[in-house]
Length: 281
Image 1 (cartoon, rainbow, N blue to C red):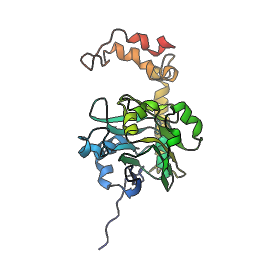
Image 2 (tube, helix red, strand yellow; image 1 turned 180 degrees about the vertical axis):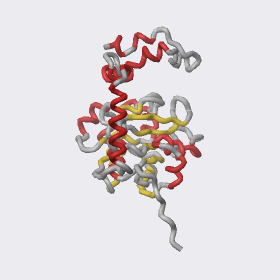
Image 3 (cartoon, helix red, strand yellow; image 1 turned 90 degrees about the horizontal axis):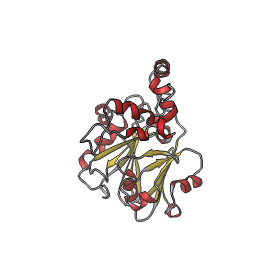
Image 4 (spheres, helix red, strand yellow; image 1 turned 135 degrees about the vertical axis):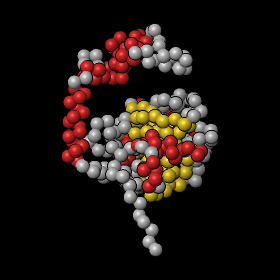
């Protein structure tokens, strides 16, 4: 009797990478089909993977650090470069997800993988190098002690990379993981999780293409979304996102009394205008 091959939703490769830094082992595998059917996007995949291990401390060998993409990553869709980084937060002690931009997610999908699941703790500083079907754990002792600006001068422009600086190495509980020199998984201290695993950096490069079920419909949706965005003053207005980034939203959120304040005990901060995009530029 032949076993039925899994069928994955369009937009996914169906392949995952598992890395055990303690054993220095890397495995490529067919991801469970139900993972894609039950859970949405990189965040859904990552949270599902970590769910039964979330009781482990953030710096334990058992806790996974997950880099996961959604079905639109690698396509021409707007904001499709964004991906999720998932682990247990050193700050909150809970399962944590960071959405991050840059090329990393796109390169990972082009290399043929939907996500990376990293466990274990290395006995020395290492880097993970992914280039299509070539996957290697490499010595990174020369990168130890270097901040992101220094790491950026060492890596070439091919593909993408994620790295931690000295704060991540030292286990600072609000340390970021930095992608391509300036995109940050900046909330929750996931840089400290990466540092606890003695993982200094991940490099990824892919030469493939993401699958699209209906390219013409995706192109039409892209045009319609752009039409709506251009009509929005909050995005393309004189003081909108295109000018100030997310800092443009500070005053808007302030007026609607939607500012988490004093650890969410309040929803209004009277001095928020001091850090609005318009005021600080």
